[in-house]
Image (tube, rainbow, N blue to C red; front, top):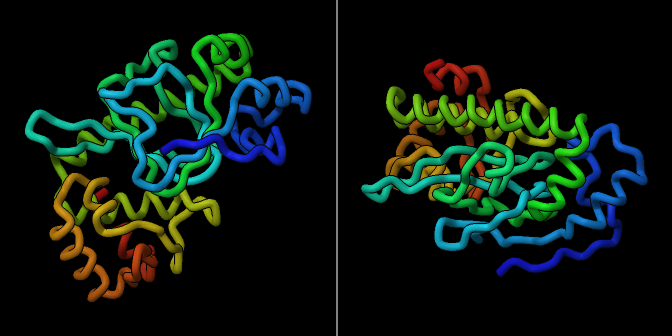
Length: 234
């Protein structure tokens, strides 16, 4: 169940969020007062077609997977949201999310803004509106790449590409490095790339046997960044 997060600092949720990077403390305070924090447990849905929401989420901590379910029951991941960015029901921003699910991959802390407050505090500020447009444009590019990968890439290539992408999203570094650790179960990884857990486990085992990765309970450590990158097929 979602719950309100503790607020020891009203600006904590919005600090280090890129779209607010040059706002004054006073401007940040106004937004913080209108964007309460909520916490979702790992595996919990933030929204779904059966429980749609008309809010904008600002992710402070954790990771969130946005995905769709095809007619034959397969899950297709359209985005993996990392801290410091936005997602949610964005009809007002040109993206319709009613047919999407959003699942917390880890415990996720978000700030939540209503449609009216998004218009009032975000879209009315040209600085923020431009950054939101840039984020949504990049997300469309990423979604098209995911669709293309699903059609043209093999499962091992999709797994390598997903691991490389998650490693680069780590707050420790913006590049793929040896020793980079990814917190992810085999089941979660399978869901991200659209395959079975058994197949994901088999591919990970092969990567580990070849010295690319080290596997642990709920975590994957990159041992050979260059060779993992080469396995992505790009």
